[in-house]
Length: 223
Image (cartoon, rainbow, N blue to C red; front, side):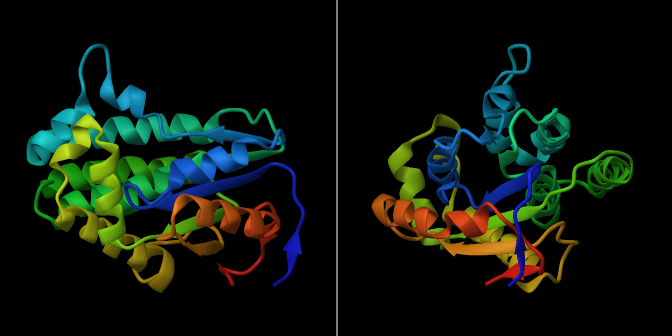
């Protein structure tokens, strides 16, 4: 693998719910040359007093378009913010918002086709007209079973209603997108890290892979 040290590097940490993205970001946040942007969940929970995230989990058919429209807006804001450090590391991306979560709502029959088409038109306009490019995706590949166990332990209010089947569907979409690469365009090379391990093992894994993560892999899959 040919790698190139690069400033202005944009890295997205991708993975299922409870795959360990926060742990990964916390590890790299200690590096002063890295700007870490977590998912703007606090915004999704409170839009002028409304909680579209909670509403979506209660009734996805009614509120899926509401949440995903706002997710697309807030993730766009994350992408286009001026960089304040040589490296930006983001939790997920506008790409996974569309290719994983919007796609899952549509495939599961909980998003009408008209909503899906409108969101797709918006997304394609953004891709064409805004710089939402990514230099590297780090995919935390985690089994749905592991994610479900972690989810039950952390007890976030909105997540209490998430069934195992939902995590399995999200996992399948991530595998199609980033591993098989049969579904949608992958915007950057992909580094796959097995993330079923416990906290200590994952910290060691991030340390071992730090140099690879903080360089630009020039092939579509980093191995």
